[in-house]
Image (cartoon, rainbow, N blue to C red; front, side, top):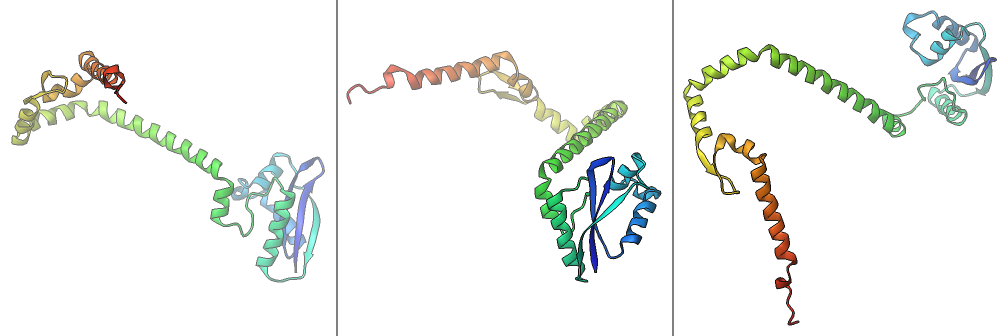
Length: 210
């Protein structure tokens, strides 16, 4: 036989807890003793009882006596009471799958995940910046030695080769990314866009013989 019970407190009518047990006396004794356990202080029920000193002010109400001896059926009934009464000291819901928990708490899960990712990125950014300034001299020395190797010489020759940008200016391949950001190149692109728009919307392109 299983019992569905409710724990409530006189001075805190808005707070309650719903549980299931076979022996109520032993279960209430375990609730009181759990308040003195260091490993269970993080549980919401015991944390609330410890903060408000309610170890000896706990009242119990039997909601239903179940004649069945199957635990899964008793958990179904316990879940029904939890979902109808909605006690604010219960954290876990019996027989709830991980998909159900995810769908019910999707926004909170994504919010916590985003905060965790942001903090992780900030830590990695700080570590990378510290590593960059700490090993800057070593990296420059390695780069100088690399430029003396055959691969380094070949890379320097590729960087020095001359190319023609689409704006018509002849530049080295090394300075291409800086040239794209300059005002002269941007002005050329703006002139092209405006000229294309004029051609599209000009009166010459309209056929008046239709």
